Amino acid sequence: EVVIIGASTDGDNITYTIQSPKLTENATFEDVSLFVDGNGDNNLAIGQSYQGGIIAYIFQSGDTGYVAGETHGLIAATADANGYLSWNDAKGYCAIYFVIVGGNTYDDWFLPSKDELNQLYVNRAAIGGFTNNSYWSSTESDDGINAWIEEFPTGYQYTANKNSTGTVRAVRAF
Image (cartoon, rainbow, N blue to C red; front, top):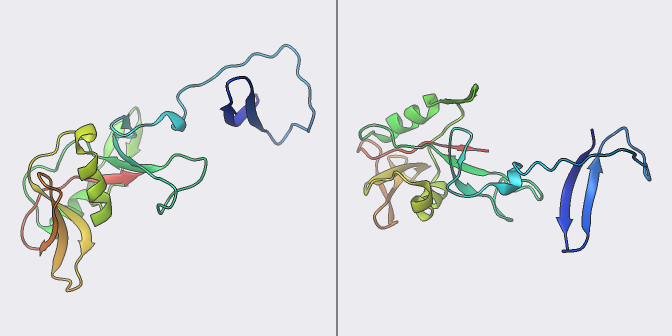
């Protein structure tokens, strides 16, 4: 088996790298078949179902977590938590949230930061299922009594007392 990585085309030529510790430079092959798997991570898109949720954001150059040549990002749960939760309850809900898909368990969900929550707002139409409520973020304000929240009808972010209640959407990184 030969794994081809980093393939690109200019219309006439394909340039690629062969990933194999057993091959040497200038190796030749006979009776070769090529299978192209079009389901790689490079085909991922915002709004696509993936790893127990819906892709909410794909990291761009300059983002924390960005790795050149790799696709990483943020996945949103497919639905909000039931009811309105305080900030501490929101964090607790996300910490125990899990999804099982095709025998895989995804149990690394968390409450999104203020900036991550804003990406959910920006891509809310593609993600779907949001209400016109205010959603909690994990980002605390300087006083420690309040945390950031975002109104999904408008995108307005403000701080609210952690004992007040808001809507929750868990996220996970991929």
